[in-house]
Length: 531
Ligand code: 16G
Ligand code: ZN
Image 1: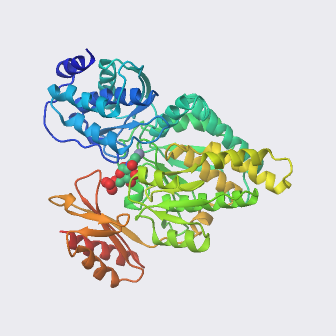
Image 2: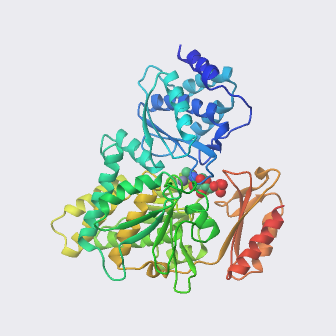
Image 3: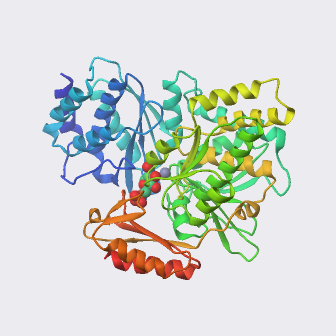
């Protein structure tokens, strides 16, 4: 039967050759590519169970995002393009760490708990990033799918958000769009062009972006998009994978953490630049001012820009929708202050990890969420979408209201609501900047970030550090929070927190203060307290 075939193929083609424990965490499975073959095969098995339990198509994305090229990883995408629920993370971890012979028992227990009918047809969509290891790992996933009698459809190279989008379209019967790569470009570019046709190139806005594609899968994909939108946006793409190494001294994570421009991009003052990460689900913008000082527009600044604009469109169109913003502890203190006090938009803070942000954003009719690292999007409740579409067709509105309502409806189509998406977020930012007539410096001037520093501390056991209050307070080890409070109180505008990483064997320290020197010092001192 199916379960014994699952073992036979495992033993023959994808045996578990070592017993390192692999955990399905916030980013799925992620580790050295050489340790992943059997894990991928088992993810293929699990994907079939997930598809059967939902009686829907699900997705498997093979990528390690911003990690070094030698790493790889895999993540399951649920039927509406969202992340799998916690229970499935536990199943994935159990299945990955059992012996080859133990596979049927784990599968059977999942079938029992989830009451899965094994005769249901199962379809799984697969895609991968540009890592050399991704090709064979994708094959391992497909072998797993086949072994349990599922059908796989391999989309080859895609960005992570493209696969989320395609899975969502497939299961909503085209409601969200056409379930193909072409359908994705088509929807995005049409919405973008229609928005820019009515209001592009005003004021200080210039339709040029210099884009660092991290030498990743974003490069060929954004090139596809670029051709369709060149009437209103000229993209100069560097780090396109033709020379440099994936994520090496480039990409959104590098730029955010190092607070400097990537290699491979010759930046001149005033150029509006952006960086994608390795699988194009994060974006940050940056520029050099006239003194050649580096300015970063991270996820917080994007969120602020987006929330402010949407708030204006909602009000302008005569709708009343509750709009809120979701951040994490990493959000710069200045951004939170600006959003709550000046923009008067409610802000919620949740633990790190996209699933927490996405989930919280669903509490709002229009929920904007961004991690400071550049991952984020906007989600509209079903009710809000209906109201916006209706309003955009309402004949009784004033011309100004009508304009806002129509614009809001198009803005919804530029946004990938399934997950943070670098390409989609870039288009959204460009729409807003051009409509506001803003240069990148005008945008940056919305508020000034507090200087900040992130460091990581290697410890024996990172799980010793436990947190509460959306990771802003330490509960263990005893005394550490008191020590952090004491250190912070010595700095003007000081704030600091520590948390165990979900993706690396380290404890992370974040600090902000009135000057860069002070932020560095505070981070350093809190780091010492963690040892
Ligand atoms: C993962 C998360 C990301 C988070 C990062 C934190 C998803 C899809 N990705 O990449 O949101 O910012 O982990 O990493 O949830 P850390 O726990 O090592 O700091
Ligand atoms: Zn990523």
